Image (tube, rainbow, N blue to C red; front, top):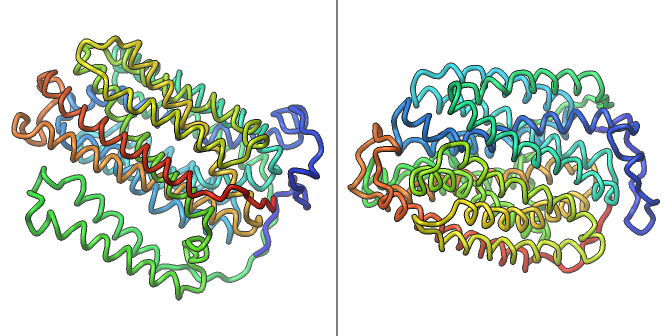
Length: 494
């Protein structure tokens, strides 16, 4: 298969040979501007979804019930996203970026309508799984398109535009979530996706053009099935262990072990597959392995905080959904600010040093969460989250760009998908582990799946969430180790 965006340069330049980059040459008014806008709109779907739901969780739980089930609203989305990211990334390398991203936008839009109409927690969880499928196509394809049409130096400038999507969403998402909860209904947090999905679909379909040479491909069906089943069983075992069944029972031990066995079988299948979803050469590349581990840890820590910080603000500190949303917005605002600055930094001091700086900042911020108490000011919560967001921004962008820039364009989709898969899988594992830790901290003081968040005593909730924040510190430590394993010098080819 041969693929090139029509507007892309046929020759990618190195950092040293690249001409001066200006906003006019890469901005929204440039030749590639309409494509960039379409990508930003598509990313906006996921960015708003990531920030708007967390603030509405208490209302959703109080309406539908099932406090111990609510982590599945995040984990099922992240699970279906994680297991489909490498599949869609491979399809984008084989059949082009455009059909994959348009299919993802369509699925995400339909699933949003269904989520808004959900009548029970199990139904909402099922429709969130469908949303995750759409996100699995959208996110890696967006980043691959950016890697295709912009050079390394240009991407340093474009990071500002991409970061602005998350910056806007960090304010708009929690604000809308709080407004909908307080004045309308939590279901509007899903209906708001419809106009954005329609606009993104029209923009991409009209403005993004590509040339794809059609050849016959061998789809790695066995690998896809094993990856899906193995990951699903692993997450199910982690999330429901200690809740639906004891850890020291057949389901408690059997499901995680069976999941691990299927993932191992997946690895063996990939070694013999003609066109593997995850080629084995990726796992022999030090840069790709270390950046993937860092992405996994970023995903785990981020989802733990976005899920439980609003819960702490509302059910421990006693604030409403709108105030809790603004506290969380500090984290998602700090991230894009740092990401937009990271391009200048990694061009000066290198990818590894930039990511190391971010890791130290994030570790300090996450450690600060363990100091929260029931008497803590909401401003302290917001400031701590902002520091964590700054650190995350200096980690996520440099590690992804380093991975993309180290390979040729014809495998960039797979490499981008691997990084996105690691982050999504980290998020899915993170919410499962943190959910298990929170439920264990609540212990026998909380009932079954019909328990509401408001019925849990603040002191009990505070104790459980402190355990979650302590676990987040360990996740940040994993990030530090992964970044230290990155090679000091990265050879860029694009």
